[in-house]
Amino acid sequence: MNAVAITCPICKLEDQGANAYDFGRKKSIQCARCGRYSITSTAQAMIGEGRPSYKLIAWIRDNNEQENDPPEITSNVLRNLENSIPNYSPSQKQLILMRNIERHTKFPGHAVNIVPEYDYPLSWATNVAELLYYLQNLVDRNFLRLPEKAHEKVNTMVNIVEIAPLGWEYLEKNEDKSTFSDQAFVAMSFSPEFKSAWENAIKPAIQRAGYKAYRVDSQPHSDRIDTKIMTEIKNSRFLLADVTEQKQGVYFEAGYALGLSIPVIWSCRKDDISNVHFDTRQYNHILWENEKELEEVIYNFVCAIIGKYTRS
Image 1: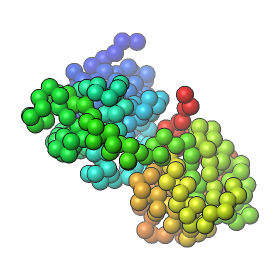
Image 2 (image 1 turned 60 degrees about the horizontal axis):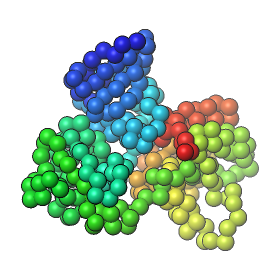
Image 3 (image 1 turned 60 degrees about the vertical axis):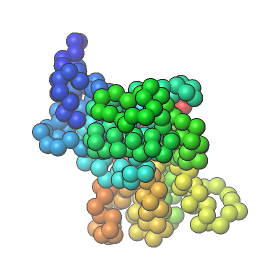
Image 4 (image 1 turned 120 degrees about the horizontal axis):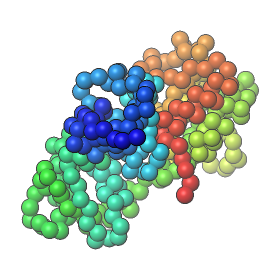
């Protein structure tokens, strides 16, 4: 099937920057800004002609940068994504940009091309101007350098950058273990009633998605429990918080993860959703009635939002 030049449904990049393969109710897109993804007709209608979501653009690009399978944008993904992705601060965005430049660096001293019009999602920036601000700031801090024009400012066309010695030190100092982790921290009630949901639904769903499901009571340890919890959350790629029974510890663990900009997936048994604390009701919750349903929904949600983990 031949590709057709289109305007990207997500970032609105005009036809010279995006191509689509039409498979009826779903299109496969190759965009110079977003990367590869597919989108259903329902999701495309939901997006419409509105303002592009920089989070959605950056999330798709991030999946491409990490060489995950091209994400499929569905109505469920659109509803869940905005609340599942953290709001990164300017300092966090600069660190993310540095890590993406590092990913494209073949060896120390290798130069990388940054095209602001296409590459502003590499820093989870809202637009070109925000990316240029971060690039210039990293150059001014001597974390990046412009080898071909050492005394010039960054520009809106093409910036050839390389990581400077201080930049390598900065990356080493701020190494994020969770980015490369295959662990998923599970916060939930430890009541005997929920042992089966853990063993027969939550744990196997996370394992099917390629991650190791970790619950703090699942392994013996001699650490203080609060220290162990915080350490394992830091070492996890994401956290699943099932708030059924409204345990305070689950809310604490989810809040701690959010504070670290670690994605949180929320779930709750349907008959308990009315009791969920009002501070977290803004987040979309996976609602479940039985274990079979819970396993399938968690698996699909993790694959769609976090990305299936594939070991090299």
